[in-house]
Amino acid sequence: MWGRIFVLCMSAALVAAAAGSSPHAEELELLLKSGQVNARISDNILEDASLDVPELVRKYNYPLEVHTLTTTDGYILGFHRIPHGRDQNNDPNVKRPIVFLMHGLLSSSADWVLMGPGCAFGYILAEAGYDVWMGNARGNYYSRTHVRLRPDAIFNTDYWDFSWDEIGNIDVPAMIDYALQLTGNDRLHYIGHSQGTTTFFVMNSLRPEYNQKIISMHALAPSAYFANSQNLLLKAIAQFTNPLDSMARLIGLGEFMPNSQIMSWAGQSLCMDEVVFQPICSNILFLIGGWHEDQHNATMIPVKLGHTPAGAAVRQLVHYGQSVKDKEFSRFDHGTLKNRRVYGSYRAPRYNLGAITTPVFLHYSPQDPLANVNDVDRLFRELGRPVGKFRIPHDSFGHLDFIWGVDAKVLVYDRVINLLKSMDVHSIDEEA
Ligand SMILES: *[C@@H]1O[C@H](CO)[C@@H](O)[C@H](O)[C@H]1NC(C)=O
Image 1 (cartoon, rainbow, N blue to C red):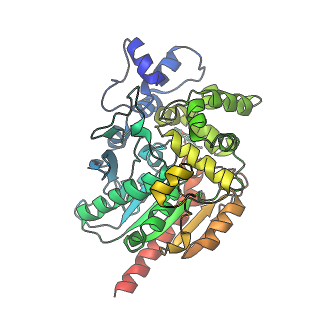
Image 2 (tube, rainbow, N blue to C red):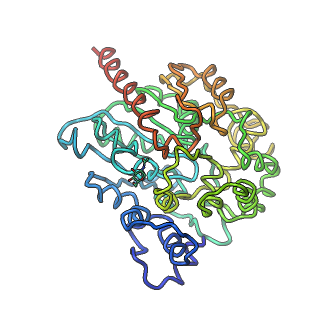
Image 3 (cartoon, rainbow, N blue to C red):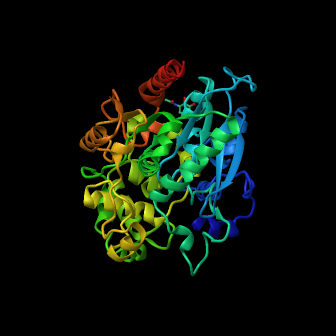
């Protein structure tokens, strides 16, 4: 929201504000001009912070395709594909196994590329021989259109009437079907981070036919149960989940606005005695996710701030708040009357994890305050076909470090790629 206000005040932006710029390119520029930031930031970093995903990927000479589809309920999703590598596995005419990547809450496909070639998982997978598809959920910067509803409508928040239930039930299956149809592949691998794991569990429990379409699933920071979550912001939200509209009044409108009261409260309490780059204190993603100093590349802060938060509905947070409060993994609780109409029962039904027969690998960190070890263990026990549960071998690996951590390649991605390769061999054996 402040981006739109500031853009009116902007005179000469270094990077054009229209097509090709990241969600927070203008705010970042304004922040830097204001002199509040002492750090010296190179032009290269500033450019990475300001370009949108397609421009950013092309800057590093990787192939990037933009794809668009309209969901059954009218949301227009824009998602991204890196069809092959740049330095290795770069023949465009070879058919490759697909990996579908799904971002977390308030994030976008930028998560998989913003750390740059050699570090970001999207590039590493393309170099390893995969056809990389990166989804974008409804409501984020790249999927913020609808055939009829307006995200910025002032008197009507209908556009934002969704949680991660709809993202998992409608958006992710639509993007997967699109990728399979375009490439002619029968199946693909799925990798999700945080909410990107939630949406997989939603999809495969509500639509078990997707079990056949997914060779293997790799959950980075597995997020289904939150009974033991230590995250301050989610715990605060959990207090306000009922009734829904008191929550909505507290936070704003249909869209989750990062500059709300709850945010400044959380920002103050978390940043009080931390010596960090101040804008991070009020960045919703850092508050929700948590990170660890030794995995945190300070040089890259402007790039992270340029691309996140990328947009989400209030309901996505409220739905997580319900999960914290109810200690269950259930569909969105609309309140008894509407539940009865929507689900045919007064209570919101639980997702049936046992119906998920895709081989699932969970990658978790004991230091992740969001995806707590006990919650991960419960998830693993209840899945229909849990195959591996891997603890990140690091003392202090946080929730956001799975995508932005300095050592994410060594600690997480290399293992996931080995598992993908072994599942590829395995699935060829099964077909033979
Ligand atoms: C941090 O990011 C900068 C800029 O991309 C890079 O040059 C540097 O190698 C990174 N540091 C680490 C420890 O990864």
